[in-house]
Image (cartoon, rainbow, N blue to C red; front, side, top):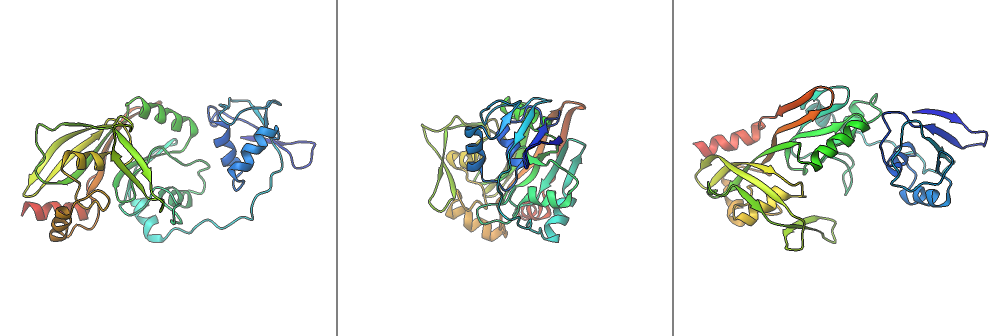
Length: 316
């Protein structure tokens, strides 16, 4: 991004470079004008204060390389210090980096760390990475994992790759496989759960998902990995990418995930206490995608010590 000062005091003109080409204008503005409320940005667009190539544009306009973006002087709140991430999380995230190149980071996210701050959380994985990599001008989550879910997560270092991976995710070109420990004996013949899911947000802000005929089409494929007394280790492949999809589909099938405080059962709670399981047993174990410059990328993340110990106790 190159910048020139306008003759008018306080007005800036930014020239869009190749890295920012293809990005929605509103997302671009949120990054360039950090701290300015979203409502103020949209008002500036409606009034024509913000222009592209001297013309009025809508928030969903896709920028092109060489576009000239006019930014007026907009008031921003007094800067606040970025939250300081604890050394413990920084160390665990650094140790969890499984792949890195100029456009992509892949992290084996530890359980207990949200992917981003908000809803009472000062920081999450993305804030942690931005603190660790201050030289990285651009770091954005490609997809999400629940706070209690561990495993592989993609972080784009360039807007072009973020757009490409979003395209692959929409087209089912990214293969994601999870390991989950469920209550009961999962039937071998039950290899596919297809049930529409509806997301609801409670007054507390908590998200809950249920099977509902009015919900969005949702499909998960399951296969048995290992059987134990009272539990089954399964591999789950989400064909669609809905919130809490694997957890709700497993519950719908009659075999809720162990350690699930949202969708678990009382019988499962008893088994968890016997095993000493204190977290959700769901892990993003394998990931396969295509990188534009280097071809197919296959990645794996083993279960952490805590989950491996649970399996050892079941085997005994």
